[in-house]
Image (cartoon, rainbow, N blue to C red; front, side, top):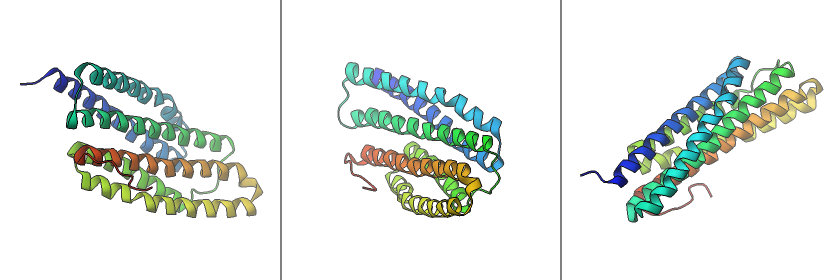
Length: 218
């Protein structure tokens, strides 16, 4: 027999997955905007960020209400806390998707000419795959998959260092590309932070399944 708690948990799950879908779409569109130099697509990402923020507020309110009124314990409490924590990290990833789109907008205004560094494109593909993988791990309740996704953050960090090195070299050699390189650095940094937030999500998935919380990439 379904209880009021079960119904509330289903609602929270639906909202979380809706939020996750919006965030994955935002990351994909933001990266596509940079790759294809699509200003309208970048503007769409920025304009849609409020949808993610609204869902975050709804999940936060429902989670607090559920804990206060239903007083769940043990695994039930972990489920509510995990949803709230994952939503918080998804909201931050959504913010970085918007930041990437805004950085491209500034690049467009500065007459962006040079190609995007190969390692930055790799970062984008990896970050997007990590976000998607973390959500799949949550849906499947697969702590092992979550650990595998989190382990990819080291590679993302290594790519970020390569991008940083290449862009600093570009800036020292080409004064005309300073504005563009600065925005590409912002994009690389945003993708590096996306990896950190995905790792946080994976930590909470592991916590949900094991009851123990530990940092995966301290």
